[in-house]
Image 1 (cartoon, one colour):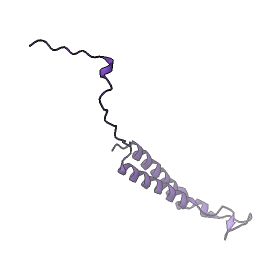
Image 2 (spheres, rainbow, N blue to C red):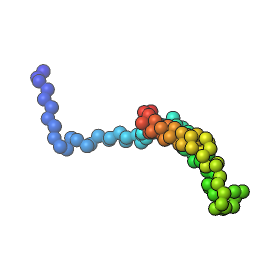
Image 3 (tube, rainbow, N blue to C red):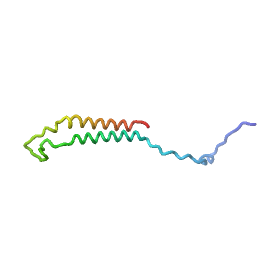
Image 4 (cartoon, one colour):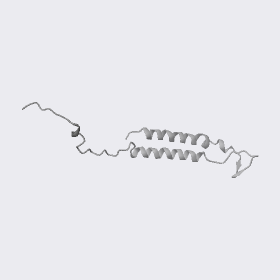
Length: 98
């Protein structure tokens, strides 16, 4: 028995059937779950921020009155905090591996 030599030519390549690559997504189910949780936090934060204007009393614009509700804890502390938390959750959901 002699030494085996392999001789390759260009016609040898590509003749085998290639295995089709499986369509893989970067995001898994858990990523989408975290994205929905983050989106819900952002939406709730914006909803909590809604309310009447500074010059609105009983739904009507009155330039002679002042509405202190624009400075409520809900609108200037809780709602922005929820929005920031929602964006942090979104970043986590995007960077999390499967």
